[in-house]
Image (cartoon, rainbow, N blue to C red; front, side, top):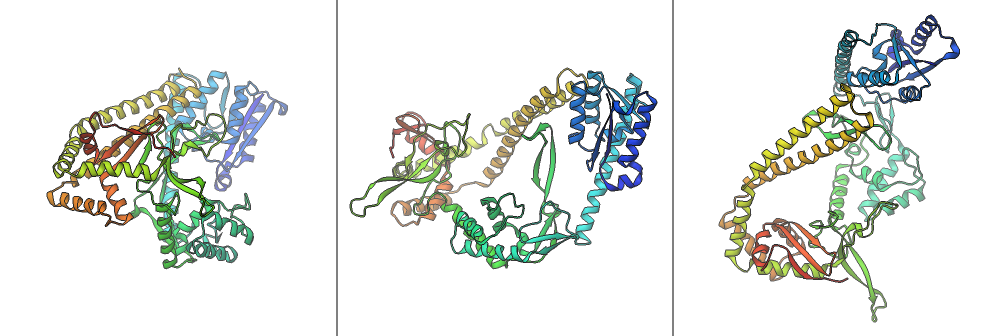
Length: 539
């Protein structure tokens, strides 16, 4: 069986003589010249797909048929119709070469000889360059259309409350009324779940209509998007493909980052929410985040506690205790606990953390007593600060240099994997994707560590403590222990003194490790080590 592959990415290409019909006609003629009948030909037509990426539905079907031996010869009008990316072109051509599949290009001669491959590769380099130039011109054209003509770029789904038409966002009156209701309900104190229930009862349908129910993510996006203030922002997000990795659905993996604000382009659109209402909603959201866990209880170390065993940040919640004989109601106990104690994901392979929940009154009192013991001595506190600042300086530069060396080794390894697959052909595509996924993950981890060290170095340069700073902190601590500080002030002080608390609550004794300014205080106060063992605090 012979395969004919035809592709166009835009209607403009079809108008310029690259139409699927024209390509198919030329390829059929070549097949006939080679002695094949129409019954021996299978046509693969790809419409509206760019040559930038080899991952296309019809191309994947053709590659599967060649792998299964159904197709033994492929006819294409031009190498550009196959793909414009040099790496992808080499991958497919070498793949078909291993399978014994012959490639026939109508507009150019392809010979499987060193000279023929060199000419083919040179032509592919120019095709890839042309593609990059086309992309640049396209991007410049879009930016110009947004900035000069105030045009809204086509979008898959318009924001809820709007309809997209002819490069503009028009108000959808029915949806806009619900947008205003969402803000109104939220400021009245309704939760996202309650807002979703109200929308369902009112007959509101999400934009994509995949379900009649609004999700928390959709409602949160409506409450956060500045487009409802009449501001459409373009060129805010940058997309990059991750070479050698694919998503669970098989598509090429991409990473997203936010560009500098100077590169953003803002276009005015109809405003649905006034600035005051929007600001109130953002303030309410921040309050809800601070109170998340349970609004009836205050969690002094919320978001500061990390589980030693699974690495998750502990959450705050409440448990029901015994029935109060006077009120007849269950007494509630506020606790810190690992979120993996009751995982929200279900099925095989999901491991439950064995860490115990700890009542907040017991844990808060224990840590606060340790802080009191640490800070009763001004000299001890000063020594702890000096020791921490010295530790921050020692070895940071050496650690950064070592991480840079590791990053260089990993980037070299990634390039070597590419060469092993594309040029040497000593590994399969599956092995390449597996190895690339692993090395990309390691590169990301090293890069994150370098960024964290750089940030830490910058912050350390600013944290030059003097005696006035120390006096101010000690005065605040004295107020706290005398009961003169409100909860919010206590919380801010804890964030200043403590970076993170690691808890080992898997055994009958709880291990507590503190990082931050108080780290050295705890070390000095502990008689044996920086890990302080306390009796299990049962819920």
